[in-house]
Structures are given as structure tokens and as C-alpha cells.
Length: 126
Image (tube, rainbow, N blue to C red; front, top):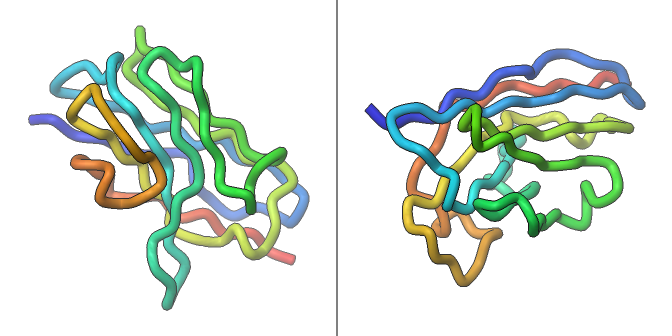
């Protein structure tokens, strides 16, 4: 069974840091675009960051640029999201996503991804 499992969420004070992990199983995603999205209560799921299969190219939403860093370890089939200088507005459920095809034309839409994890809650207190 191919699946993504996120971990690392929790409660943190504003200004703090968390590192999310997304472990893939069932197949390798070393050639595939992977991303992180988030969804706050009452809001639509939004793009946070993405990374190409070889890890060379990364993309970020303007709201997290300079604070969050996406990375991957293909030997472990795992993608990470290091989140620093967290703000209360970062509070959301964070989802890992993978594109099953090795090709992509865009990276910031939910429709660009075929496989999703179950999500992990991140809560930032003020």
C-alpha cells in the first residue's frame, strides 16, 4: 500500500520552531515532486512548499519564505519541513503530498498532487 505519513506537529509558542516529517512507503518517490500544504479551520487548503525529486529546486509560498525550509532524504523516502519563527497564523493542519508522475507543470495547486497524507496539527500560541 502506497502511503504518506506525517509526524512532528504539536503546540509551540510564537517564535518557536517545529520540524515536520513525511515518510513515504510502498514505492519510492525519488523522482517525484513532493509538497506541503496546510488548512486552517474554515479556510481552503493552501500551498506551503514543494521540492523536486532530486531536491535541487524548491518552491515556497510568500507567507513562509525565509522562515520555512523544505528538504528531502531520498535514501529514507522522507520529506521534511523545517518551520522557524512560527506565527499564530501558521496554525493549521499540515498535509504532505506527492505527485505520482515524474513530470509537472505547476506545483502549488492541490490538483498537482495525487497522494496525500492524513495531516498533522500545528498550533502556534501567541
